Length: 237
Image (cartoon, rainbow, N blue to C red):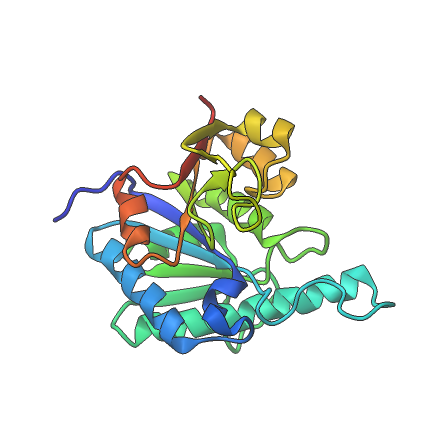
């Protein structure tokens, strides 16, 4: 078995990651590639949980007069669509998977029950958490931090379009500087776009490191879980 740094990981994917270059909806070729990379972790004996955003389907109040609470619930439903899509991609390659949702929808998923989720992980099943926290005004970043704390994950693997955390947007500024490591307080004080402040604070309070890395490079999920020098590590020290 290949070396591994972490026993249990929380993989946070943006909804846009599933859209690929088309920018919206679900690109099942991309979903399949992500599933194959997750399978590599399972084959290494790493327990994998995942949270997927919903931005490829719905993002914020897309109508001028839309109520924030209604918009957030629509976003939660979008995350469930993505969770089921990722589940299908994983099960197509033989990985046992469970979707658990914060809003009950028993015909398609289990309700989130912490002990059940941990038991699934112990049995080698990938657990995908949908519907956010079940509450408006909380992002899927916060969901990932909350669920990571609840299941006692060793790390949050934060897969993004960029290969780490920079002092400014590297897509706009050629002189943007990448950080190899940051503390939680660095992130909060500098206002760096890692996770939202609620999620970052939750990780700080529970001492859960966040490894930010680029998803577009094939094999990066495995590298991140193996402890390779990749991306930006956010931790207490």
